[in-house]
Amino acid sequence: MKPSVWVKMDTWVRHSVPFGITVFLLLLTAIPTHIPGFSGIAPMLPLMGVYYWAIYRPDLLPAWLAFVIGLLYDIVAGTPLGVNALVLLLVQGTAASQRKFFLGKSFAVTWWAFSLLTAGAIGMAWLLLSFIKGRPLDIAPVVFEYLMTLALFPLLTWTLARTQLAFLRDV
Amino acid sequence: MKQSGAAGRLATLRLLVQRFAFLSLIVASVALMILGKADIVLIERTRALVADAIAPLLDAMARPAATIAQVTENFHELANLRTENARLKEENAKLMHWQTVARRLEAENTVLHDQLNYVPDPDPAFVTARVIGDMGSAFGQSMLLGAGAKDGVRKGQAVLTGEALAGHVAEVGARSSRLLLITDINARTPVMLEATRTRAILTGDNSQRPRLNYITGSPTISVGDRVVTAASGGAFPPGIPVGMVSSVTDGIVRVEPFVQRHRLEFVSIVDFGLGGILPFERPPPPERRRRGREE
Image (cartoon, helix red, strand yellow):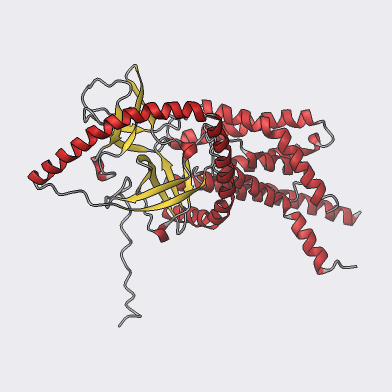
């Protein structure tokens, strides 16, 4: 039996949840928090979104969507176009190619792998930007941004897992 | 058997296509970086267009955040009411003294202006805009503002908060623009020390305290000296407060800006009628004559 239009639409909306929520995370990062000192070290939420969906639903957030999110990231953050696009693309590629390793593993393993991957990602962004600007950027805020991102990972994974259960359990 | 072979080939083909797509995306991002480095107008336009498109969303999200920040600040203020009051009383006493001095100087200044037939500075036009996006990042210090070319914002205009300089407009879309703060690694602001009129360039390096470079002469700079904008380069009118010298160590002078990034909610984008900090706008391309169509 062919699924009706409504069922198709419902599936389509559910399938766009991973992309939608990652873009939402991106916009969330851009909100002026008015917290002193926070603006230099805000966690990289979109990176977590890309990582999570690359492991659990790579079909719904493929490489090209990670690329698109990266471009949006560059535009909102004011970084040179292509930097975060490349970083998120590589994060998606690496995580998706290793996903068999993650499935069924404990949360600690996922976290540990995330810490390695994020170190690589932020390090790469730092290198690319230093290269583009022609001089090494200050390293201290980068380290703090990295630690903030790591610290928020459990909370975000929990939220994303709830989202996945709510919207994508059977589709 | 045959079918599974075909399916296998199809799977290999799909994998190849996927690999190829992935590689081309990598190449695309590297190409974008190189193009961006070359300052292509098209890239700038695209950025502005996309920023315009998401500006309403960001604006809507920024409002509740601002409200929450206000409420927490209210609580904070309530808790510190007594100490704050004592501090303000003390400050008020000091300021009353300054007010007397200022009144006297103002009167004297008016008289001197009259005697010298001084031409007063024109009153600048300004636009007030809300900060709608602040991507906290270790890699750059910029903000998205909710006003753009439609509201009269132009590239290079000075952005002030209250009386102090926050930065300048670096990108302009139709209804959004990007404010590059004076602390950003790309920001260069011509400044001078208010007391000695020594000129220098304030160089941002993404840290909270930008550096003073290219200081003319060898003046004695001490902590607490006020730094204001200089007229060099025709970027900003002279005399806008920028910050205070916060440290002088081994010839490295650092300035604590008056603008506090986390407090920025509304900023004024001011048109001083000067070229702004980015005067090198490309000249418009020569109009092509369509001989065939026009008579």
